[in-house]
Length: 124
Image 1: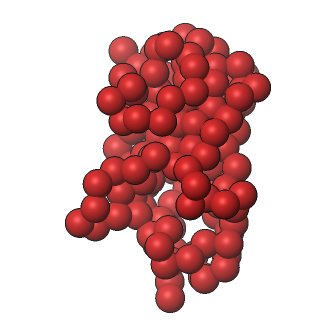
Image 2: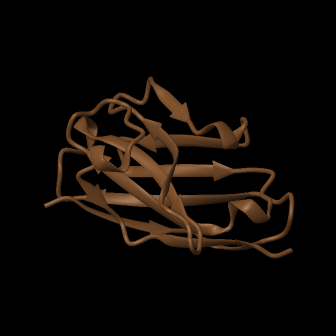
């Protein structure tokens, strides 16, 4: 049973940076495709970034605009999202997710496993 636990959320000043993390346990980490999603109050969960099982392929939502970087460490079973240039629209609960196919995926329905989320808040 795959489990995901996010950490690293918090309050950030406008234009600031924050890196959130997610540890994955209970599965074949090296074969999992991984992603980050977010959900703001009153809005649907939306795709942020995804990375393939090998780490060689990544994709991002248009609103990221080169501000965020997704990465994974297969030796530590960890996934990261480095966020720069944060603004009020980035305030949300951020979720990491995993899927068994190993490819890059952008739809929530494509993911098999989810974490509980970590809150990121722009302090403006």
